[in-house]
Length: 132
Image 1 (cartoon, rainbow, N blue to C red):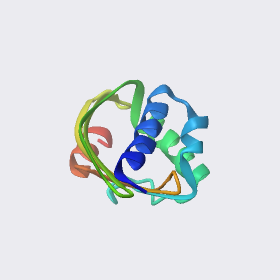
Image 2 (cartoon, helix red, strand yellow):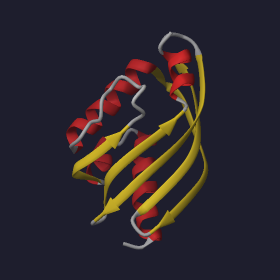
Image 3 (spheres, helix red, strand yellow):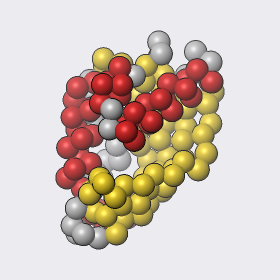
């Protein structure tokens, strides 16, 4: 798969995520998708489309007031089946704290669907703000 096609799949997924369009998100994830969040975030390493989507939804609602979440994409690099996105996020944490952090997401696209999601974030900052 070429980089531009992989990039489009990921951007379509992120757009659907921003709209809360779970049906489109599900359609863009492989059946056996793997999500690898930082080990410091207490949600495990979900595998499988339904499990990944459910864990994302539950974690988002547990840690943040999602109505306040704002994500800004800083840059995107796509090569072959790999897409890397640098972004920042701000939100009100569920505990009332103001949250701001920087993220790097690595996506692997296979057969037109996202097969792997790897999340990199300052997990200490996350814990200090969100898990206090």
